[in-house]
Length: 331
Image (cartoon, rainbow, N blue to C red):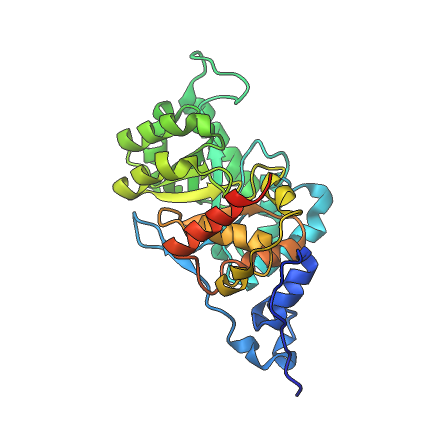
């Protein structure tokens, strides 16, 4: 069989599709078709899956998960293929929320249809009251119980791997309820979330006052505030970190910015075939980060993102090199 020769990555920006093809050709056979073993002799030996331990228990998670804010009924068939492929590739972390419209319902039905619930680390969210209405007259216990019951029903499961207080809304009021559910086995881990740097100080304070298992926080190459505010507390208190919006907000501002920036020549040394992979590897490489979640509804994007979770992550020197390269590029 004629071997495949992969040309070095140049400064030309690769499309997502080109990057996936390049990753496949480079030997990551697990990311090809189900019949790739016959096509690629190295397919049985893809780059190793990178995992990180949850400090509270030692349970290991793949460093790349999926965010589901855009999961809708209209995309059901595409999402079915996407979720099935994710677990085939070794991924497991799926993050959703009641406020994500049809997301919980679609995920629950697809997990049941595919029979993959036990291969998924399933995370959703809760608040002490409607996110649009913050009133002391709302009973957080009643509201919280109803919210959990709805999520379990929609997700077609009897337990959650992680339940997070969304945007910190009512964490202390919900705490007795959350710990009770944890003792009963309804949930395994308790967390809090934010997606804005303006809440980092409040999050850090809650991390010091509550025995949290997880925090979920915004962090990316262009938004590094969490590295100096939240992450030191997470390391000190042994709290797992899920980094959200790694591409710079839900609109992916960093991806938009990178379109006119050449991929750094050293990216290939880090196993990154395109900007999305390099940005994900950068986020996942912070010592405090357990996992990062990137929103995906297209199979080629999911596969490209999952490829970033194999091989190796940048060390401290490589992280500084990525930061310098990003900062030195014109906006």
